Length: 307
Length: 275
Image 1: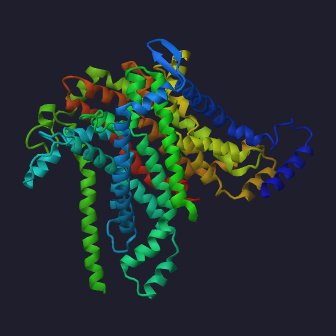
Image 2: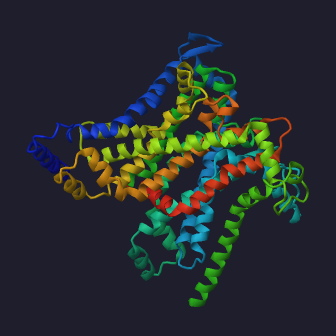
Image 3: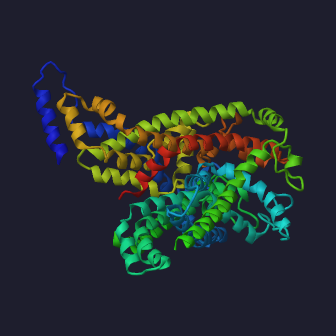
């Protein structure tokens, strides 16, 4: 409302100063501010998105392209590797993401506890992995988890635990990928949860304490409901991130062994930029977009109704 | 009660200290590993203290992939990107936060679509576009496509909306044009938010991998993540080199973050948590 008033004030003021050259007034100004972003977005995002759909309708044979209708999508449905990639991505989504968010909530509660010492150092330590690039930490984890002579197996050996075939065994490669992801993103999520916790009104806790609620009950009935909108946010962001997962499996395992860490993002890349099958890669991209859209809607339905 | 609290505090603090040590071990070991030869890296037991091969590893990096050129590429690309994307996102954020105009909600919604549409959807067309423009292996191929970063715009809109309207009104009454208002009145109090945005953009570009992997095909155009990944593919993988390169990629960013973390965390949270 106040903007409208001030716009009039400006218009009036500039009308009274005749020597000033007519400049684009407040009417045009907002468009000029958002124009660069919109133009760049249209050229480098919207147009490629539409083009990608068009491409997905073509069969690519070397340099030749022929219109194929829905053939790429039909191929997708029958492609066992696509289903493998989808299943791998799904496993990360239902195992790693909830586990990571649960740890992050626990960390946030601990960060907020009055009993905790060295709070700043601890918080920062958990946040630091977020700064590390995906390739850098992928390489680092590959070395640390080296089955023969990596640091992790050496430590396990000290405790008398036999060497774990990290990255070489289908199950352990998946666990390694999950560990790397958890290492990277948990602190970031914890800091987001913490900021929400700090914004929760104190008196809810006081009221619960007066009612004789113990720590667990306070957590269950005050903290968790309070975190709800942020849980939704982090869940949606993590889901989107997981479905696009590419860098970590590319660097850590290159999808192996036996395709056990092949993700949709990696499969898309392989088809597009290893086999140069642009049509099929585009179809995978669209399948991915549909899945993300679908899961986003489901998550908002189940968690978002209360905001 | 007090006694229980004291015991609880010690237990909580010590368990978190152990956990944070585990989290930080990879960083420590990165420093250690980058100062050892490949043979030493895979010694049993593994080296736990720094060795004397750092300079040799860096020299090998230079010999095998021209690492100084790669670092220069990363620094230039990230800096140019941060300045330009910072400008684009800040302007857009301001426009959406502080003006009312036709189509505002629709246009903002359109931009936010970029947050949920997987970036992979655009990879193939962007590659074809760059090929047609003959822009493969150039800085602009990396910098331009992500300038209008939806998260950056979102972050700036959130921060800008906290700016009091009275400040803008006062500026206008004083005869400030809209552009000068933006530069002189709006930007100065936004400095913390701009710092957060700047760090975010720099980190984003510094670490970006998929798009540079596709658009940069020659070694002299590589950025650091590409160089590291390309070394890993080599038959005789020299892990001393790789770890030294990884340290160059990760440690300056960690330092930058430690120096500026107060701005960064609060700025990011302002974007993430406000409804």
